[in-house]
Image (cartoon, rainbow, N blue to C red; front, side, top):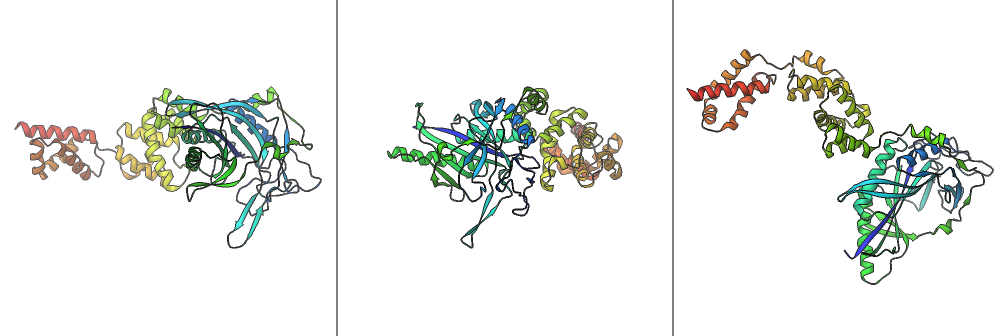
Length: 480
């Protein structure tokens, strides 16, 4: 390749606080337009903002999780711009003195782990939302989102490929969801990303002219938008043309970026300290208090699952993708210490049932204790694995325990050798042609006989014992 991409990401996350950053209005999503508003978030004359302490707690929490330095004193500033969904005509944000700086997080790439620097994390308020009427030349403004607390996470320009950008976003999203400070929902806009990208000749250290990409509501769209922009800028440079510094929108339907406006510079916003808000002072005691609430993070948990439980990377990655799913796995392990068996059941049977019922692991009707009980019944050969799967489905539907279902339906595995010998003999007598095939060297026909025995015993026969008895009987016929 002639050019190297230099990519930096700006991620906004909506925080899971019950009230807005500077007033007591609800942050609830989906309420009727303009119902969660008050004079403060509507920017009425004479009102005074009061900082929500929970926002600072969450900012400290994320800073700790991303290896940032936390500022002992940070300050809010006014960012001035004029837009219909910004009632005050300025946004309260942070500029010269953010809450946290100089951090990093580690991502997995094809070439191994890579650290991506985090330049800063700062607190700010969200703007409102414009709703455009396609049938009329009018737009409506919903101020419910105005004042909802945000954290903005600005990466260093350390990302070199669209794939790395997508991986960085996935890693960051997993962290904020684990911390329970954001739900990570890109479609609803609670996890939003803007990307800055420029190209430079391979081997050069100078930065090229960057463009900012907006309107990307999924990891896939971020990756596709960056891929398109690399092709677009490469073509411009090959023709000897200049890349214009601008903001471009991603058009997912057409798979292209479209020019929106020239990119504003920092001086365009005329930042100055907000006179209505005092500086935020964070001492060591406050940091230590928040540190006690930071859980084991996804990447650390994945590596531990692989090391402690001997799980493949694929299993570990899926299990830790949801903090509650990882907890479910470990709670099951405490009661049935076969990590790979437990993992297999969770990744296949459990996730399938959850997907079919469109529910999350926190709504699962089968507790870790009951899954462990079922696996123990299979392990000690009380029931077969096949019957275990049907029992598991019924556990989901009825909420009953595995043992109760097995007893009520008489599903205990048949291990009576005399009884099974009789059934095996009947099957062999009823299928002389298949017996001849087996004796002639077609040993795979043993599966047919097993199936017949299972059918006669309604699936209750112990498969291992059935196999042993079949081979014994067939070898007796061979020796005659």
